Length: 126
Image (cartoon, rainbow, N blue to C red; front, top):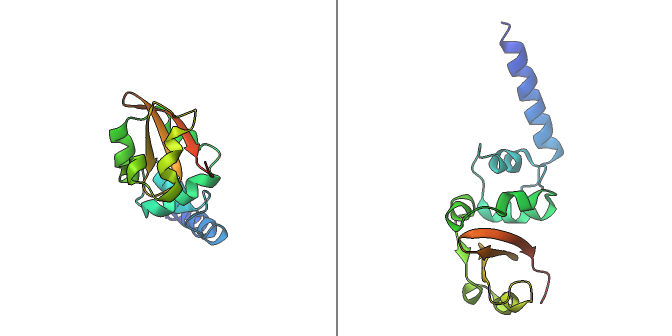
């Protein structure tokens, strides 16, 4: 009986949170928050949309290895594999002559020093 009350409170909080932030692309969405902390699996394309509004997005990427990022996001693409104008974005001064990959089919470019991510850049045109 004593355990039922805290469980009911936690369930109420989770349901309320899900109702307030229902969009999967919202970084305050409960599923995104759980995924970010390694506790839930979500659509990884939705995750790349949600990280746009996440104020701590760099902490998800910077310092991670390519393998860690592949486990988190599913796959990374080279600039040559990317769509349209993104193919030339790795020539930006910040990424020129460096190893750069895009997270999935998103506009998130990750710059690496060796195997470790050093920068995360949201490409908004180049």
